Length: 447
Image (cartoon, rainbow, N blue to C red; front, side, top):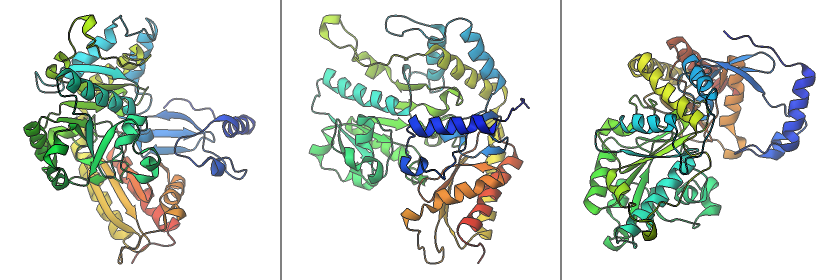
């Protein structure tokens, strides 16, 4: 266990003062955050599946630091790889130059998919930019292929693909996306595979791609797709010449029980976006992967203007790529995917037990591999939900802190997404903490 030195009260007060004066937090109502009575939790350390706050209190990282951490905080293999790379060079431009970690990582990522499929890798910064890259790549691909009319995308209702303007234009969550609807990318939304199949032929002829979070939709409240739907979508896209774009930003790197969610149905998309867990949660890095067929359309003489005019200052970031390579090495050394099977069974068992104990206020419980969503309701017998303004999901998560768990809800859906390094005991602790917190925050548990 690494030594932890608590902040002095004076230093903590100064951090909070500076934060409230200058730091604009994401997805946060800053009037409430900056209220005099609100004391933010300052996280100062982490090791394994645990985080430590400024008072020295420890918490299980119940949402993997917003779904990013895979092998635990401060994993020595990844930390050492970053230190070693720091001794060489932290960052060099990918515009006209190569670096070893980026080249090796591109090859390693391609090697995770069937040979001859997703062989080309474009690096960016985070999940949103990985999707943005896929959208622009798809549009230019069809322009260069003599089908410029294919300029629209199909996405699913309640989808979330990021917050840059192109990615947001695909989003289907009103609170996040309604005010930005219609900007940048042309998109149509469908609620199901049946809706997609019912599109008129002239509409399908204008589609460049269909974008999907495979198996499970994250920000929609951990909503599961029907079994076989992804395979059916792959066949539909292939038959109509539409690119299938898989958003594996959340589901990638083991979360669903396989390295990628698409593997569960034997699907290889035309493009896949990965981020979050790519570096094991150590630093920002994302990748958009695609096929030789798509890549070949961009090849030509300079004067033909086929170049993919898109990029980021930190594309192919050497430190990030070194961390990602080390994360893949940890998967191999620690046999992470083999360890995960028993942990998924423990999670399923404990969720069932918690639901039996808290049946008044627990509605639907959904699980996909090592990801779970728990709906908190006013009355499970009638299905009555809480008024969203009561923020019951957040109140439960705050109550869970005194039981040793940090997580964050999606509205009134509690999210359990632990680092893959957890023990069975830590999984049990996480679910037990949520059960106790539900009982406390919702005003009593039981029948």
